[in-house]
Image: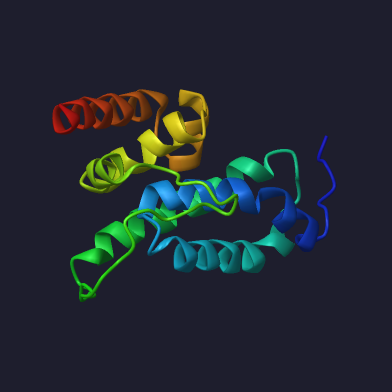
Length: 157
C-alpha cells in the first residue's frame, strides 16, 4: 500500500540535514551548496510524479548520489578557483565534518567509491541501501566501499 506524499516543504525540512551532510562529505564543503540546490531542484521537478512516500529518504539520496558523481565527472572540465580557502568547513550544526587530511583523502577517491564510502561510513547506511541509492547491485556497492576504504587506509598511513 502506498504512503501519501507530504507537502514538498515538509519533505525538504525532514531530509535537508542528511542530504547536506552527505554532500559535504561527497563533494566537499565548497561545492556542497550547489550540489544541494541541484538535488532539491531535481527532486522538486520529479516530486509531483511520485506515488509512494515510503522510501523518500532513499529516493532523495539517490538523486544526491547522482549529483555528486556528475560533479566529479565534470570537475576536470571546470576551472579551479585560486585564493585562500578555509581549512575547515563547518556543517550546519557548526562542527567540522571531516579533518582536512581525511577530507583530502576522500576527495581523491574515484567518484563511485567516494559516494559509496560516504553513504556507508558517514550516513551509516546498509550495503543494500547504498546499492539502491547508487542504482547498482549490492555486490558492486560492497566492492566500491571496500576499494574506497582500502585506498583511504593507504593514503592515511
